[in-house]
Amino acid sequence: MKVITVIASPRKYGNCSTIVKEMTKGIQENKGENTIYYVDDMNIKPCQGCKACRNPKKPSKCIINDDFRKVMDEMEKSDALIFAAPNYFGEINAQGHIFMDRFYSMTKSTPNQLKGNKKAVIIFTYGAKTGTYDEYIQKRTRLFESIGLKVHEILSVGDGKPLSGNSEELLERARQIGREISVKRNDEEYEIIRILRSKDRVLKAEIMSDELKKKITKLEMKRLDEMVPLINKGLKQALDEKEAITVVIDNTDVDVSIEDYTPSLTLQSNKGTIIGEEIYDPNELEELKHNPNVYFISDYFATYPNLSVPGEKQFFVVSELEGELDYEDELKNSVNRMVISSPSTEADHYIKKILNIPQKEKITTLIIGFTE
Image (cartoon, rainbow, N blue to C red; front, side):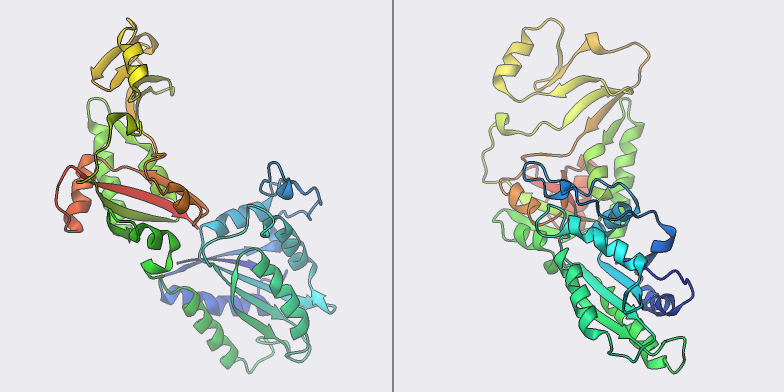
């Protein structure tokens, strides 16, 4: 599990950092990781009120490309956010305020609201008696909910704790919160998994372990040693997402016309020039077969020798699959980003073997990478 922490206090050994340090211990007990950012060390500008994020024709991410964008891009790939800020002069300090100010670009009125039930832990520290600012803190907490976070816990910590002493109970609670937010999720907790498992022809849909990802990557790397190397770009993109799913689909009773196939294989030069590609459209096939500058190396793969430059290296490239599934839009709407890819034959056989699936041609495997 991956956690992002933002500390707004300028004091790196103060109360906020001390509490976060204990939470990190709890996260690490579950083999999770916690990346800590200090607002004081970052370049974050205030909201400019330009409303580009709310443009009715083409809303975008916040157009200020600074460290706030960097942190929130990381947040898309993470499972939880810890935000810790001190209360100075009766309200959140300036560093915390400027960070939260930019939440305006991530509310439900924009396309940028976080998805996937990501958790948030909010820590506010202050010198007054514990509970003094609870009403104010509750109002601030609603801003985290507005960007799609599910608040797991609020720590309102007064009396100058934990550094003022007598704080063992508080620090143990911090460690426990770290444990709670870093528990690995069950497959069924992912909406995309629930959607896939509800489909008739889907035999399996499971989150890939890190070990399986490494094995599949190793099998795909072997294709680089072939006479014309093959690069599975789509699979790499899928595995680069935060999570990946192995999906097994039974097409035994499905008659698919060749023109319904999704082209995904091209032959490219090392400069990126496409010098060969899959063609399934019958009209395009007929036209190309009468073109003297086109050479077919199989019934559905056309090459363009006139685009090939002597001495340039050539690679087969497998891209991501688009339009492969009838319910693709439904899957996309459940996550932030999604990439559908097809493993090589050897990787396909390996996946079927470990999942105890028959090695039949009409039973296909896909790897879907996604970030909530």
